[in-house]
Picture 1: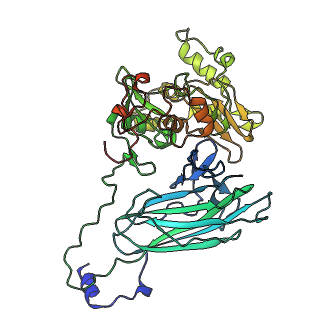
Picture 2: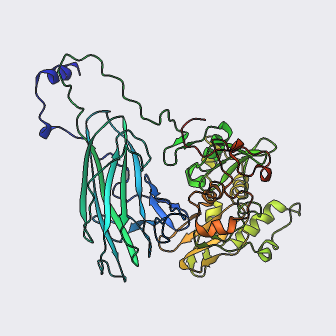
Length: 486
């Protein structure tokens, strides 16, 4: 190693011959797995979606809508079998995906390339008239921050090519040991069909920048810290929140982690006398006995609604719940599991919805017990802890026959015929949206307008509460401020 340092001080370095890193992007070909977002979107793992939020007071009705994301198989793609897309019919969007990447060193040039194809037109034939403008850009934040709207993001020139695949390229100087890459698109007109597809994303890094005046080198300077350090395994840059509470962290890991909960979307805060933390799918709660449990987010006091961002889920059905055994009944433990198996089918109307299998495989023995031998009969109880019991029969979405839902006490199972996957909706995200008033779909806003949680978050007030009399023993201070600490 010292020999290499000496040679570097006396021999010129030819940039054209410099060795570069391999592709630093995770799942840049979009051939890997995906995860659900909201009711109807799937995003490639390793990537996080973003979109410009519509302001009803300022934006026209067709502007700044949340698009539907898809990690496609066998659809439009440049190579392989997968691609990533987003779009919205009859609406305009400014949206994309991002990924934070660790770099091999804190100096040198990094080059991002990506292929994109877009169409904005009428009918169902790709490239059909009017083939209106869709602006495509790629960006890099060399500080590693994850705010797409920040001034630290460097953007490529706008690309306006229509229909055919075109490559975008951007090279910037690294400024830290991490960088965040962004793929972004916005359509100019709310045509009938508006979509952009992405594929073959690569980020490569050249050698470290040469010193301005070569001198015999001493020890290398320490890497520059990333702006949002410190970070550890409890911090999730996808959302900017951290699981600081030890009990919540233990529960998260022993109940399936991101697969079960999604990412944290709040800090720990006080709600109606309990410490809670909101995740995308569920809300953790410190119960009166000191143990961690989950809020029944679909209960009457929280979100007893049947439409979430236009996903029509079945209503609570007293006739179904009335067939469940009463708590305290003889052999209740087995009887309630028999009820779940009877009401939550794997096969329904010729479709493999896998609702019972999803319930029955919520967690693994290794996740719960680690290397300790599993205790017989415990896992079904944990499945009940996570989901509660079904409170409706399966039902198709009346607006989309490819979607089948089943309502449970603590979530909604969603089967997507187009991908053959079954997973929980990101319902707790909507609970946060109700409290903050941000990213709140119109149908949920209308249903929740009389809720005591509706737009309660007001950082200008004491305890950040707009109407504190409605939420006793509640403190929202800092609850929705992203950051790795606390």
